[in-house]
Image (cartoon, rainbow, N blue to C red; front, top):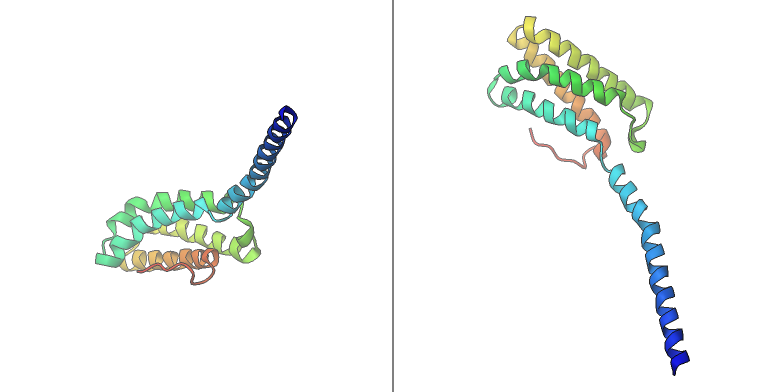
Length: 147
Protein backbone atom coordinates (compact mmCIF):
# COMPACT_ATOMS: atom_id res chain seq x y z
CA UNK A 1 0.00 0.00 0.00
CA UNK A 2 2.83 2.38 0.88
CA UNK A 3 4.42 1.63 -2.49
CA UNK A 4 1.15 2.39 -4.31
CA UNK A 5 0.79 5.72 -2.48
CA UNK A 6 4.36 6.67 -3.42
CA UNK A 7 3.69 5.84 -7.06
CA UNK A 8 0.48 7.91 -7.07
CA UNK A 9 2.28 10.88 -5.52
CA UNK A 10 5.06 10.58 -8.06
CA UNK A 11 2.55 10.48 -10.92
CA UNK A 12 0.74 13.52 -9.51
CA UNK A 13 4.00 15.47 -9.34
CA UNK A 14 4.88 14.52 -12.92
CA UNK A 15 1.38 15.51 -14.09
CA UNK A 16 1.57 18.92 -12.39
CA UNK A 17 5.06 19.54 -13.78
CA UNK A 18 3.93 18.61 -17.29
CA UNK A 19 0.93 20.94 -17.07
CA UNK A 20 3.08 23.86 -15.90
CA UNK A 21 5.58 23.30 -18.72
CA UNK A 22 2.73 23.33 -21.26
CA UNK A 23 1.39 26.66 -19.86
CA UNK A 24 4.84 28.24 -20.10
CA UNK A 25 5.11 27.17 -23.75
CA UNK A 26 1.76 28.68 -24.74
CA UNK A 27 1.94 31.92 -22.75
CA UNK A 28 4.45 33.72 -25.02
CA UNK A 29 2.34 32.92 -28.07
CA UNK A 30 -0.64 34.69 -26.49
CA UNK A 31 1.53 37.71 -25.67
CA UNK A 32 2.89 37.79 -29.22
CA UNK A 33 -0.64 37.64 -30.62
CA UNK A 34 -1.72 40.56 -28.43
CA UNK A 35 1.33 42.57 -29.53
CA UNK A 36 0.59 41.75 -33.17
CA UNK A 37 -2.88 43.27 -32.72
CA UNK A 38 -1.51 46.59 -31.49
CA UNK A 39 0.01 49.56 -33.27
CA UNK A 40 0.51 52.14 -30.51
CA UNK A 41 1.92 54.79 -32.84
CA UNK A 42 -1.25 54.68 -34.91
CA UNK A 43 -3.34 55.00 -31.75
CA UNK A 44 -1.32 58.02 -30.57
CA UNK A 45 -1.71 59.75 -33.93
CA UNK A 46 -5.41 58.89 -33.96
CA UNK A 47 -5.89 60.59 -30.61
CA UNK A 48 -4.18 63.78 -31.81
CA UNK A 49 -6.12 63.69 -35.10
CA UNK A 50 -9.46 63.25 -33.34
CA UNK A 51 -8.74 66.25 -31.11
CA UNK A 52 -7.98 68.38 -34.17
CA UNK A 53 -10.42 67.08 -36.75
CA UNK A 54 -13.74 66.51 -34.99
CA UNK A 55 -14.31 70.12 -33.85
CA UNK A 56 -13.61 71.23 -37.41
CA UNK A 57 -15.88 68.62 -38.95
CA UNK A 58 -18.67 69.16 -36.42
CA UNK A 59 -18.70 72.96 -36.31
CA UNK A 60 -15.94 74.38 -38.55
CA UNK A 61 -13.92 75.18 -35.40
CA UNK A 62 -10.26 75.53 -36.36
CA UNK A 63 -8.93 76.53 -32.95
CA UNK A 64 -8.26 72.91 -31.86
CA UNK A 65 -6.23 72.16 -34.99
CA UNK A 66 -4.19 75.29 -34.37
CA UNK A 67 -3.30 74.09 -30.87
CA UNK A 68 -3.00 70.42 -31.89
CA UNK A 69 -0.85 70.85 -35.02
CA UNK A 70 2.48 70.49 -33.19
CA UNK A 71 1.20 67.31 -31.52
CA UNK A 72 0.28 65.90 -34.93
CA UNK A 73 3.82 66.61 -36.14
CA UNK A 74 5.33 64.88 -33.09
CA UNK A 75 3.03 61.88 -33.37
CA UNK A 76 3.75 61.56 -37.11
CA UNK A 77 7.50 61.75 -36.45
CA UNK A 78 7.32 58.98 -33.86
CA UNK A 79 5.08 56.88 -36.10
CA UNK A 80 7.22 57.17 -39.24
CA UNK A 81 10.37 56.23 -37.28
CA UNK A 82 8.89 53.32 -35.33
CA UNK A 83 9.31 49.71 -36.43
CA UNK A 84 6.28 48.58 -38.40
CA UNK A 85 4.19 45.60 -37.32
CA UNK A 86 4.72 42.65 -39.63
CA UNK A 87 1.30 42.78 -41.29
CA UNK A 88 1.87 46.36 -42.52
CA UNK A 89 5.63 46.29 -43.03
CA UNK A 90 5.70 47.06 -46.74
CA UNK A 91 6.70 49.85 -49.10
CA UNK A 92 3.12 51.05 -49.62
CA UNK A 93 2.62 51.69 -45.90
CA UNK A 94 6.06 53.26 -45.55
CA UNK A 95 5.14 55.65 -48.38
CA UNK A 96 1.80 56.52 -46.80
CA UNK A 97 3.53 57.21 -43.49
CA UNK A 98 5.98 59.54 -45.24
CA UNK A 99 3.01 61.33 -46.86
CA UNK A 100 1.30 61.59 -43.46
CA UNK A 101 4.46 63.08 -41.95
CA UNK A 102 4.82 65.59 -44.80
CA UNK A 103 1.12 66.49 -44.53
CA UNK A 104 1.41 66.97 -40.78
CA UNK A 105 4.41 69.27 -41.26
CA UNK A 106 2.59 71.26 -43.95
CA UNK A 107 -0.53 71.62 -41.78
CA UNK A 108 1.57 72.87 -38.86
CA UNK A 109 3.04 75.59 -41.06
CA UNK A 110 -0.32 76.43 -42.56
CA UNK A 111 -2.15 77.01 -39.26
CA UNK A 112 -0.31 80.28 -38.72
CA UNK A 113 -0.42 81.63 -42.28
CA UNK A 114 -3.25 79.92 -44.15
CA UNK A 115 -6.84 80.89 -44.70
CA UNK A 116 -9.56 78.93 -42.89
CA UNK A 117 -10.38 77.21 -46.19
CA UNK A 118 -6.76 76.17 -46.74
CA UNK A 119 -6.38 74.90 -43.19
CA UNK A 120 -9.66 72.98 -43.41
CA UNK A 121 -8.70 71.41 -46.74
CA UNK A 122 -5.27 70.43 -45.44
CA UNK A 123 -6.73 68.95 -42.26
CA UNK A 124 -9.32 66.99 -44.22
CA UNK A 125 -6.70 65.60 -46.62
CA UNK A 126 -4.50 64.63 -43.66
CA UNK A 127 -7.45 62.95 -41.96
CA UNK A 128 -8.15 60.98 -45.15
CA UNK A 129 -4.49 59.90 -45.36
CA UNK A 130 -4.66 58.73 -41.75
CA UNK A 131 -7.72 56.66 -42.59
CA UNK A 132 -5.88 54.99 -45.48
CA UNK A 133 -3.32 53.78 -42.96
CA UNK A 134 -5.98 52.77 -40.47
CA UNK A 135 -7.87 50.80 -43.14
CA UNK A 136 -4.67 48.99 -44.11
CA UNK A 137 -4.20 48.02 -40.45
CA UNK A 138 -7.77 46.89 -39.87
CA UNK A 139 -8.05 45.09 -43.18
CA UNK A 140 -9.84 47.62 -45.36
CA UNK A 141 -13.20 47.92 -43.74
CA UNK A 142 -12.96 45.70 -40.68
CA UNK A 143 -12.85 48.76 -38.48
CA UNK A 144 -15.85 51.04 -38.66
CA UNK A 145 -15.20 54.66 -37.80
CA UNK A 146 -18.07 57.08 -38.19
CA UNK A 147 -17.40 60.65 -39.22
